[in-house]
Length: 69
View 1 (cartoon, helix red, strand yellow):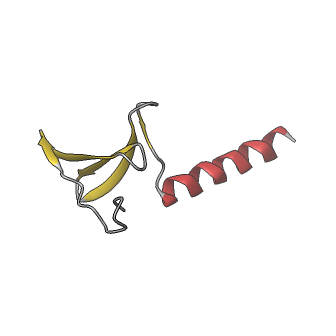
View 2 (cartoon, rainbow, N blue to C red; view 1 turned 45 degrees about the vertical axis):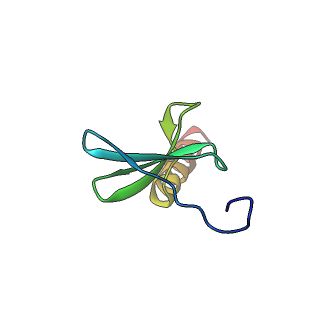
């Protein structure tokens, strides 16, 4: 949302096969590649995990924890 309370467009620029834009509010870049919209943290240099990726990571952590018990 902009200062006037209205949604503001995020301009996407073409870089190779990727469309990228920046959200100043989130401090993240939005990358559209392979028909997916991904959030990229330029500070960490990594994508934020999608819901599915987050669930898989948590399942792997649970399995690892069970093995070490």
